[in-house]
Length: 226
Image 1 (cartoon, rainbow, N blue to C red):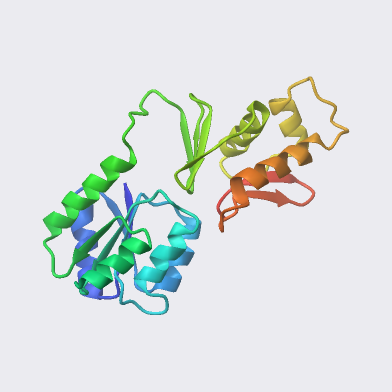
Image 2 (image 1 turned 120 degrees about the vertical axis):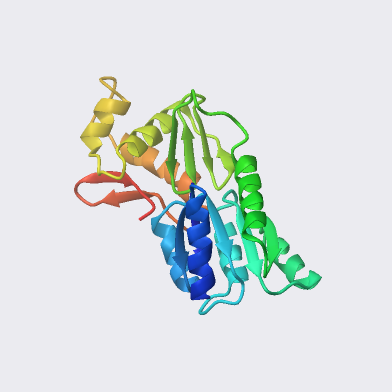
């Protein structure tokens, strides 16, 4: 499990990451809100830990920004501000938990594990799952989720999305798509691929700040948060 920590206290940040890593988590640490938001555009994390009083963009604004495109990844606020109004503000911005400093690291661990269990309540050990940023493709059940919300696709839209996802960020040409998604029952002189790419963009990308479906002019299409 990968955790991203926003904390400008260098000593506390180092100690927290060391503790989490000793408990089998991966932990990256960021010291300001602006860099934090850039980091999550290029990397996938299972949980965010946010201090409020940090440089450039404060933790509450970071939380609100995350929730504008990701409704699913757990967020824990860790702050020296302990007033009820501060907690109310955090939960209004859809944080999942709030821990007041100073706190025992063991208590943080309990809360992290609790949220991660809630995030993955279903055993998917026998399912084929593809995750790209906040997009989840369940090939076994032919279901797609983004930001924690299910997206309804037609069968051909699902097959096209799954094919793009399986390329793992590589560009696939229109010809490759026609051969693998439509097989031999397809006229390659039509604009059907472009039409279906537009269908997917409206359903997968339109309501999200981070766009996943990209065109590489003259080459084809690829699926990536970059």
